[in-house]
Amino acid sequence: MSHLLYLLRHAKSDWKKEAASDFERPLSKRGVADAPKMAAWLAKQANKPTAIVSSPALRAYQTALVFSRALDVQVKDINFDNRIYAASLETLMEIIRALPEQEKSVLLVGHNPGLDLLLQVLCKQAKPRTDGKLMTTCAIAKIALESQWRDISDKHCVLYSLSRPKEVL
Image 1 (cartoon, rainbow, N blue to C red):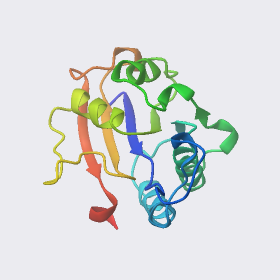
Image 2 (cartoon, rainbow, N blue to C red):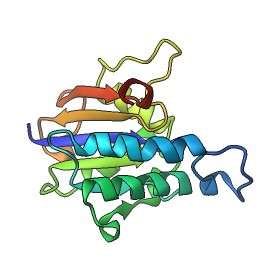
Image 3 (cartoon, one colour):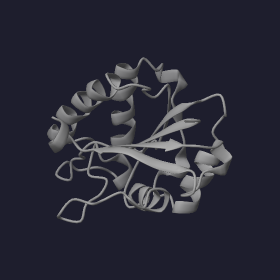
């Protein structure tokens, strides 16, 4: 295995709180509860992420901070990339292709529909729940990449696991 890519959809956001914009929507009570539990679960796994790349949208930012503490990644070392918010498939692929080769295990914190599409393209074997959802809030997909970051494609990716809060917690 050359690299591990973890996809993490931000924890549940609060649609009830007034926010100046979608970008500034915070986590809900459920999101605040799920994020540390999933982060602690991920921290116990083999080959846990050692680097984090995240959307800077408030709900993703808050989720990334929780995971950084559990994974012992310094907040100053999180790469908050504006392109992840509302990213297309091609933009997400560009971000992954530009990852430094020395980073062997990376957590990408983002949003749907982008993460759903990315997972479906990279790992055809990814199966949605019976309600059709793939990357639910705070879901974590673990993908093995048998090549360099710049060569990421469905030909080089294997889905190890897709873990959702309701299934893990």
